[in-house]
Each structure stands twice: as C-alpha cells, then as structure tokens.
Image 1 (cartoon, rainbow, N blue to C red):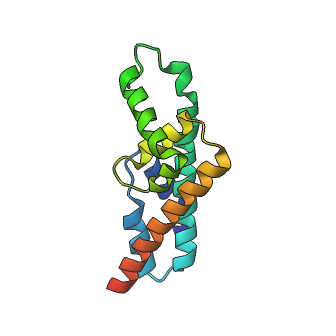
Image 2 (spheres, rainbow, N blue to C red):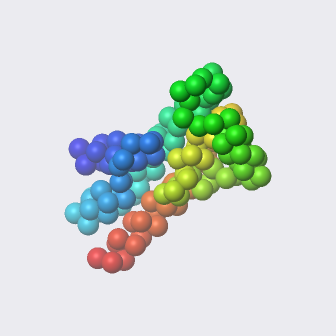
Image 3 (cartoon, helix red, strand yellow):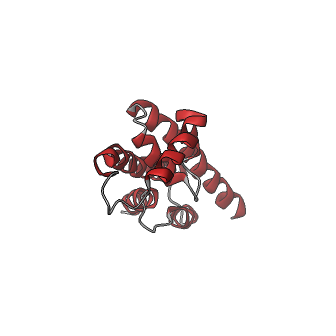
Length: 140
C-alpha cells in the first residue's frame, strides 16, 4: 500500500494539485521500504502526472481564444518562444519545483513526440528522486 500511495502522490505532485511526494518518499525509505522500488514508483507516478499535463497542453489550441482562458495570447506565445529556445531538451528540467509543470504543459502544446516527452521527463524526474533518496539515506 505504501508504494501505491507514493505512486499516486507523485502523480498528483506533477500536476497542478498540491502534493509533495519527496516528503513521503523520504519517510518511507527511513521505514525500511526498498529504495529501488520507492524510486521506481515515484518516478513512474511523477512521469505519468507530467503526461497528464502534456495531454492538457495538447488540448490548449481548442480553447486559447476563449474569453475564460487563463493565459493571454501574449503569455502563451512568450512561453512557446522560450520553449523553442532549448526545444524538447528543456523537458529534462521538468523536475524543477517552480516551472517544471509548466514545461510539461508547454511540451504538450508544442506537440513533442510522446516517446521523446516521456523519456526526457522520466530521466529528469528519476535523477531528482535518486538525489532525494541519496540525501535521506546519507542523513540516516
């Protein structure tokens, strides 16, 4: 059950929902759960959450001209231009606590091929969770 909880917490943390999977990850590893299994669950859940953002991003074109749309045309164009500066490689930074979720949303808007999207996001998030585990294990 702990692994499932971590998976879904990590998934939620990658979306716009307020969730903090690193805290749960750190707590579970100190309780003796397998670090490798925790890493895999957190990475998979967080990557899947980013895919949700990518899917939402792919739908933005349908709604961008609506009055209720939360981002102005100018803001959206600026975000797309910034994304184009580094291209799909910027998805390696999707793990960042500030702006990472936006990168995956923009990656969806820019229609980064799914295989590239998932691979780049998973690499970045996997490295982040490995670093969290390393810090917690070293501190205990």
